[in-house]
Each structure stands twice: as C-alpha cells, then as structure tokens.
Length: 146
Image (tube, rainbow, N blue to C red):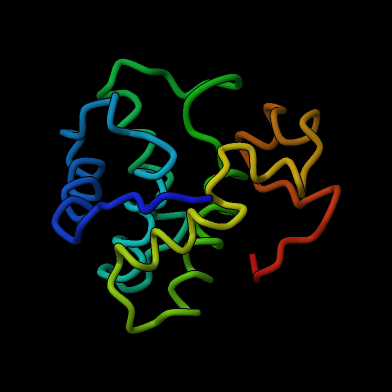
C-alpha cells in the first residue's frame, strides 16, 4: 500500500523554487520532487509546458555538476510524458490542494520510477533520440493526452 508522502504546500513550493533558482540540493531531486515541482509550476505559472521546463532542468543539472548529454541529464521524452501526467492529475482534481494531488499521482502507476516502461520499450526510451526529442510510446498509449 502507498504511504502518503507528506509534502505540504510550502515544501512543494520550496522544491519548485529550488529547481528554478538552482538552489535545491541534488539529493532532494527525487522522483516525488520531480512531480511536486511539475505540479506547482503547472498550477502557478500559466502556460508552463515542456518547452519551458527543458531549460529549467538543463540549468539545474549544470548547477548540480551534472552534464546534459546523450546518456545523462535532461530527457525530453520523459519530461513531456511526466508533465502530461502531472497536468492530467491537476485536471482531475482542479481545486484540490497540491499535496493531495501529488499523493494521489504517486499512489498510482506514476509513483514507480519505471512507470514509463509500461508505454515505451527500454531500448526506445533510453536512446539519444528520445533524450533529445519527443519519441511517442511504442508499447502502449498513455492514458491521458500528450
């Protein structure tokens, strides 16, 4: 059974702000933090999308001493799919507090760090092409709009 992640509104905002201003410690950039930041940015920055997220993550990676290459760092396909999952979670609960939306999102398939492998073959998802550009699912369509 899924245990609540117990991030409150201020913690979620701190994660999003820390991502944007590159002050979030790399050890706190967890799977849950990725979704927490996405939810906060989607709700509080109208028009925020994958194109806006790419430079944020790339800059954060560099600030943490990581490179954005064909094998590490920013991943376009994962980012777009994850933002679509976060947007669908917000649309399903438009008036719910972000901690509740985050917890419900992580209680489902997205709570697993390998959730995208239900939709993409590993060999497809972890190619330089999928890291640099959007590559559609090759196993099963996503249950929400991309």
